[in-house]
Length: 256
Ligand code: NAD
Image (cartoon, rainbow, N blue to C red; front, side, top):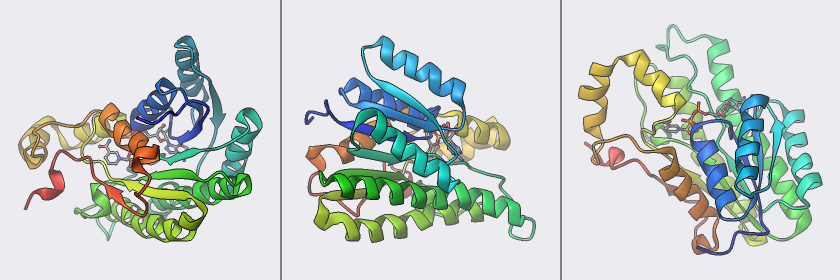
């Protein structure tokens, strides 16, 4: 893969799951990494892990649904590392699943505020920084197979993830001429703390007999496998890919 040393990557939701694996992979490839999430202690421990392996990382406590936090997240990255080459808007929550007659306005606002508005805010400040530097860049947003598929009780989550397709493709069209590529990664079932919470909610039996059989590869993905897709889309190997979706889902969306 192309040389990613001397590059700077900013990853939201870096304290756990897919975001953590992505930060570790960028660091392994020599990039300096800015780690953003809400939990300071988890971020600090990841910074220590990356530094122990010879990498460079900073932690930036951020709530991606708060505009001032997101602005500070990007400016702190530039202050610390002098540039921003790759941005991964991965932070997300599943929220509370509820039927449309039960879903509260607060549930809706929380999920849309983090998953969709948080990505909008992230891209806005990342794009401003990349445009000001004039070196191009790559932004990857993290959707889901639920960017294409709905499910009962999933209106808020699925709407937030469907919205990321419109957000990603529109912004990719705006930024392409300035050398900034914007893509969406849509994972299937991935073994992370979020996934473990969902599995606990629905129960092992329903999961094993109702959910897993819809995955052609017959297993959950690992966060590291999603990180590979994200880092690929940032790399020069993906130089002709923008406004696109990549769906590492073990074949889930192929199922009829
Ligand atoms: P996770 O719960 O393990 O990690 C989510 C991360 O987002 C954590 O670091 C958390 O602190 C952070 N976060 C949540 N709200 C935040 C906020 N307001 N501000 C800043 N950070 C915030 O989950 P994961 O499975 O690693 O999920 C990462 C992304 O992948 C999410 O967008 C999720 O929707 C998506 N996804 C996950 C799966 C799966 O099966 N695990 C499948 C499809 C898509």
